[in-house]
Length: 253
Length: 309
Ligand SMILES: Nc1ncnc2c1ncn2[C@@H]1O[C@H](COP(=O)(O)OP(=O)(O)O)[C@@H](O)[C@H]1O
Ligand SMILES: [Mg+2]
Image (cartoon, rainbow over all chains, first blue to last red; front, side, top):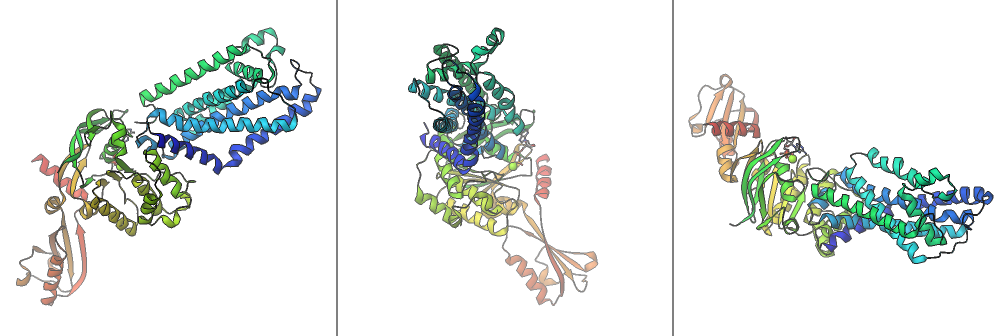
């Protein structure tokens, strides 16, 4: 194993974010604060409690998930796409590194950043609303596995994209709608029966529901189902990554 | 001399069906400087890319120190440093940052003293904390060389290292290359400047259309192929070549107002000097002087013509 190489990629990726702290930390934090002001205070004060939780508190897990998912994909996809775009990818490709070591370096860095971001947003939330976390370890686990899974997804998107437009297609057209419609800001129980059923095909529902269970001990779907769903999703992504590597797809001619 | 790189029946066909390398077999010896000489599109970059693991091969094999570049890629790649043809660098990273990254990627523990040494040698030490986007083209090229040397490779590939750089930079690059050779590093460089091959290579391989059409000791090759012409415009036309000049291969042209002297590019400049000295002794007044070098193009025409015979 080439430990030094994984460490080098990891450090390089982390340093890249610290060079642009405004983009990597400040902007997600500011948009989170905006969500709180608009949904939590302005609208939330006129909402009834959901599952016995005040609305301003109820949206915290959804908000964290929203940011973590979007930022994981953005970070990881950019992390691998940019060297491809610049041509600097020649170096890791000519280095004695296995594809999986590359994944660990790039996806590891993106995951670290997402987890840090999730925790920062949680901390910011404390400034606005009182929160108690029912199952802190489960909460951390969901935060971890979500960051890993969506960083992997971002890695795949970054490898497959041929230009900046393609890089944005999946996040904008698929991911953001799925997360918004997956109950980030509401319980799917308030939807009409038909929509509740349709929503169950949205994988984001299982994640957000599971994460919310870790906070409030209430959920839209059983928490075990959430765990199975994210497990299957991660397995699927790992499968796609190994298929990409076995074909040399879009990295080597 | 023992071969450090063995290329056997190597063929590369790109996805679009283009055959960039066609059944190439070459041995590269440990410690030598070999120059791959060929026009654009000859397949030089493709060959290097396959050896370094950037491009897949279609057929044949490449081994480095006995290890296969596909199967034992960890062993082979850690022996290699690559200076790519394109100037590909992360613009916002610092010089030191990017060179340290290279060393890490190639599986080596950080070594400040070694990196400082390299950067000093390439006159980059004073700029170590500068972002790459602020550097000039020549400086960027040095950074690429520093990155390739960061992990102390046994073999260095330089893909057109002096294309589009100024004279100083070219000299510096040659100095670095010669210094590496002294330390036993094997060097493979591609170029389309015959002058460059002439200056530093031990052997020259001429590659064209995906085939190696010739591989030879440089000195031999230059003797056979490199001819230069000295063209002397005369103040007063002459009809016969003076006796003292007959021993040189000189022709009269342009109804006596021009002398043409053909000489070997690998010979010493003293030969040109002797011709000019003889002219002076004969009191022949020179109006103008020019020298022409046989271009790579001429050499190819020559080579292809000879291949047909
Ligand atoms: N990715 C590619 N796909 C198809 N053809 C390619 C590719 N890369 C290079 N070629 C072709 O292969 C030939 C050799 O290219 P290259 O090795 O870059 O030549 P050189 O470095 O000697 O100038 C050229 O005709 C080039 O157009
Ligand atoms: Mg080339």
